Image (cartoon, rainbow, N blue to C red; front, top):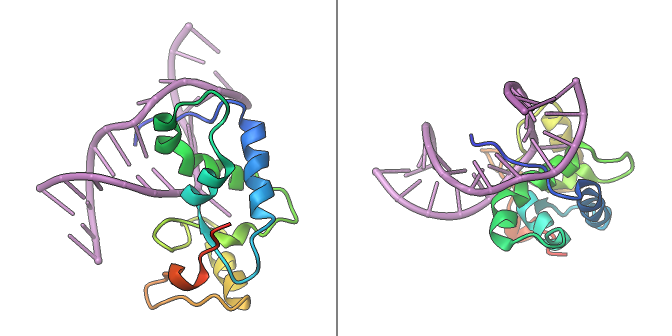
Length: 116
DNA sequence: ATTATGACTCCCA
DNA sequence: GTGGGAGCCATAA
């Protein structure tokens, strides 16, 4: 995996992401990439670079997610929970909100996608 | 100054 | 459907 950068003005980007996460209603989910698109690129950044790294930057924002935000409603573009220690807890929280998983752990985005 | 590092996504065999 | 590579330069230690 190639190296990647954290976004310029990382703090501001993270805060934009967090503000969006706070608006996701219960029972809905959004992929990292879409979340980053809604947050928008940092000022002065070219779209090519942004598109290449936006999803991982959104992931970086979630890694530093403040308490009180519904972090569990953010998933990957395949409709699955990104592997990590708290993945099991994330699934439990989503299921408690009525989000359904198929037999391979995927969420139906047609039903549960939050478009903003 | 140098090095390791990350909640990802797309495209093509 | 699966698996691997590319994307490209900020921060912290």
